[in-house]
Image 1 (cartoon, rainbow, N blue to C red):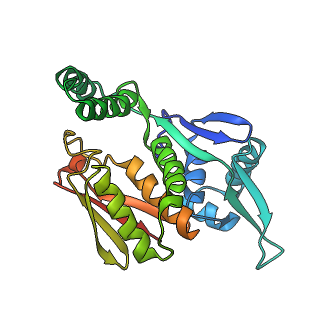
Image 2: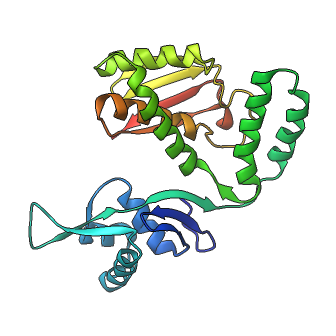
Length: 246
C-alpha cells in the first residue's frame, strides 16, 4: 500500500466507498490486514504517540473502516480488526506500457484468444496509465471467481485441490502449474497466460491469479490464506512463483 501523504487509497465498506489519504491512517489499516491487533501493537508499529493513534482510531471507527472488540484473552484491553476492503490507490500514471499494449490490440485481432488476452492486459494497464493501482480489486475479483469455480473440484484435501487447480490451469490454457514445495506452499507457473507477453516493469503482475488461488483454497477447504507472487515476468523472471504466507 502506498503510504505517502500525496496518495489516496480507496476502501469498500458496507456503506460504500471511502477515499483516504492520511499516511498514519493508511499505515494502521495496512497493519490490520494481517489480523487483529491491540492498541499497543498499533502504537508500536506506527511509532506515533498514544494520543495521536487514539484520534486516528476514533476517526477510522466513525468511517466503519475498522471495528473495536474486547480482547477475549484480557477483557481490560481492546483489539481492532479491519472492517473494510482495500480496493485501490492512486499512483504515478504509467502511460508508456499502456500505449504499447493498445498498439498490440490491433495486431492481435486475427485470433480470438490473442485479442481477448490483449484486451485483458489493456484494461489492467489502463488503470495504471491513469493513476490507479488496480491490484487489490483484481485480486478480490480473482478470489470471488476462485471460490465460485471451486465447487467443480472433487478433491477434499490440499494436495488434491492443488492437482485439480493445476489441471484447471492447463485445461484453460492459463499456464503449466506445478507445486515445488508444501512448506511453505510454493507454486510455479510456466507460460503464464496473465503475464508472459508483458514487459518488465519492475514488479509482479498476477494479482488476479493470487486471488484465484486464494479463492479456490478457501472455497474448497475453508482455509483463509494469503498467496503472494514473488517472481513474475513483470520483474524479470521467465515464470511466475506464488508462495503461501503465514
